[in-house]
Length: 146
Image 1 (tube, rainbow, N blue to C red):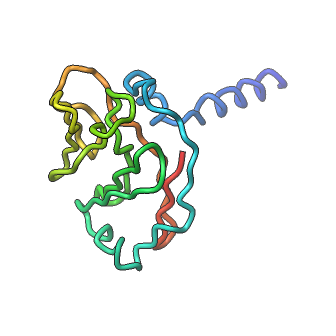
Image 2 (image 1 turned 90 degrees about the vertical axis):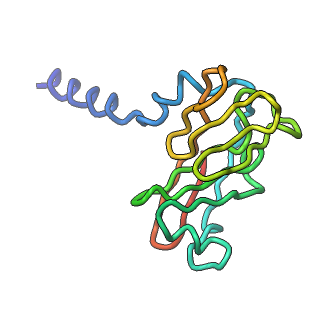
Image 3 (image 1 turned 30 degrees about the vertical axis):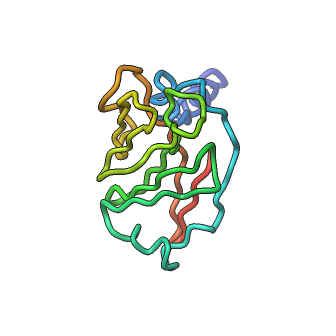
């Protein structure tokens, strides 16, 4: 009986690993520092500066957190957040990406582009993906943290 309970406990612990951590493990660059941050209740969809995020397909750059801020995207049912600094570069004046549609473009003249929905690279040859952050929604509050 003890072996069965131990087996169940091991399965529960193994299944509790975050899927997004496993996906990110092979593609995020070590060039980006790992700053801890938590937006807490700062992102409130009822506030005018965040109200556009109430609609699917809208995104917003949020500064003051992480390495160079992050982009928050309403993917239609959930939110995703990715680091605004290109993972192919150490943070610099040109590594903060700009948004066009749902694509983030590096300003360092290397042609790196990434999709905002998945974080996968769409142009460039580095093989990196965007650093993802955890997102929780509780009513009109969006919490982003790592």
